Image 1 (cartoon, helix red, strand yellow):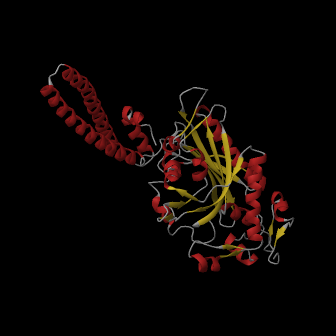
Image 2 (cartoon, rainbow, N blue to C red):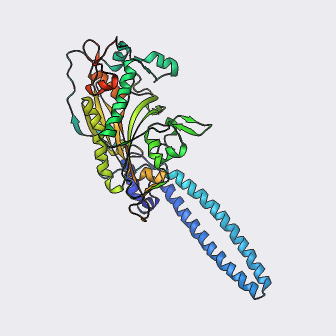
Image 3 (cartoon, helix red, strand yellow):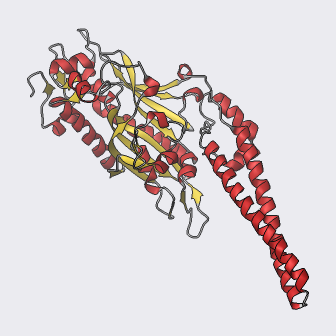
Length: 429
């Protein structure tokens, strides 16, 4: 959520930023409601002052024995009191409507973000490693998975419908090994604290991180209990500190969490229907940072480096891509993607989006900190990034390390987590 004072003082700058984002928002409506709110506040305060003065006048009239005048003044004070009650109710309605409209305003782009209409204007910042050259035609992961007996698409669809699959044997072990190794890397090398959060959250949590109200159609929802399945661990982990004031000396906070994630994928209807690239349920390791505002740009650089460490450790070529204004998410002021090369499908696959939200989420979620003992609380900055997302890492591993005989070499860093095997073969289980 943007600061209403900023919108009020810089409406043209906000509208220009929205133009760069290739989107719109009800800025004029918000400004009209803001004016109405301030008018209501002013009228209410004027009437309260009149009521306070009237109370003193009534007391003076009573002491002077001017009973008739005192009674008339009391009737006037009753009318004023009723008017104040009505104004306060109108004010609550105006504030609620204003807040609801403000929730639909996206974050504004960081000054460093290149301006562009869509993903075609994104900028490759750097690339690590060269795609492997094969002396045979590399297979896509869905053919590898089925031939090795480690991915069962047919039974996944039978159990749950389209965009579901079952990992079996070394497929399940490989995914578990990746998750455990990634968590260990971020905890032991990068200094994150591991948390294991709930997969079901309250509505306020999704409002805080920005998924609601805009993306409700892409979320799974239990209407009876008003609980929502998380689309990413960012939601529960960031909300660990919702409506809190973090005391001096506690920042920065670094968290890492493994969770399953659940998305309807309505916006991706018809895309990537083969394989495991896009599903309604998938696993992800997520990094979340809560930091002081002056440090958040540096913290974003470090977050990207932490995500890259996973790709480097696996020995898989990857690149870092700076998003342009037209390809930023609703909540991000700045975002860089890490993409791994998958030779079987011949694509760069996004395995992490590392974002700096500045104070956008903190304002929605009420996360503040004290810069010093006794100081006035200020909003924190929040960041998050996948570290990394399954199953696209699985795709890159299977397709990069496939062999001519149909087997897949297990990356050395994962072998201890899988019990030692160097290869996945059709006879592994």
